Length: 193
Image (tube, rainbow, N blue to C red; front, side, top):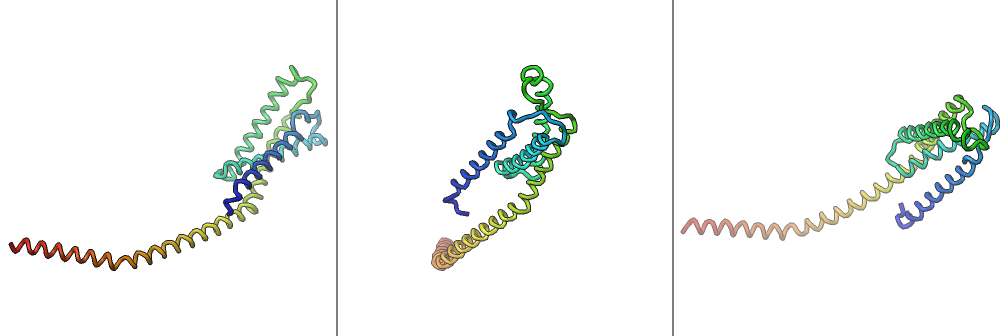
């Protein structure tokens, strides 16, 4: 991996994610909610929004918190989808009729809730499947190549140091042997007195 361009690489990824989320909010924001019935065109549009959220949310979560497993990412995104549906329910029962009657209701019934949650779940699962089988394999191969290069460099360094130590070994051994002989001679001379 080229570490000189890493900063620009992360900036580009962050910018791409930010633009994707801005587009998502612009297209599926509260101002685009419309009254509809199940399986009408506007309902499909809403369901597509849940699918995009599931996929984009799971990839974003995986990007910023890489240690997460795919199953944990799917669980978190599904949980957020459930929270979103609870927020829509709260909006429909308390805010829309009392304060925002001119806006459309968010809920289309319990079937809509279940379909939205399942759509979020399956789109997150699909995104993790695509990530694991296409992107992650390439990433792992690059890491293996990088680790192999590092191991090769380290083995060369170890070999150079080992040769240097072998060259230094005989003089060190000579001085150690001389010290040993002196110590033995001095101890023998002290005993003979």
